[in-house]
Image (cartoon, rainbow, N blue to C red):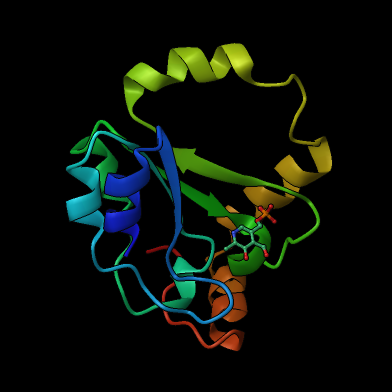
Length: 136
Ligand SMILES: Cc1ncc(COP(=O)(O)O)c(C=O)c1O
């Protein structure tokens, strides 16, 4: 379905969410969409709670793929609005130009770094949410 929509409407960019909120369904046709002339932004906010592998490494392979992750779910830091993304290198120059200064608060940065250095905490949060892999 997303592939047909992209072919029909020819957008410059498409946002996909996998796992999807709220039904948890996973995308299965990313590769065929990535073959189209469109920038694909893949939201993996819930990937830690899925059995399926993250697509984050695909960013090295596809120049039109961006993968976004958040600490809101896997580190229980919702409300701090902190996350990260994997972007094709040539895109970074333009993103830095558009980025607002101080768009991540100091509290959010400290909390995210603390979470990343505490694997027990990440495992506990993800396990409580029914997931199995805190850093896929
Ligand atoms: C699929 C999905 N992506 C992103 C977000 C929000 O992420 P953040 O808290 O980093 O803005 C949510 C929050 O509910 C979500 O469900």
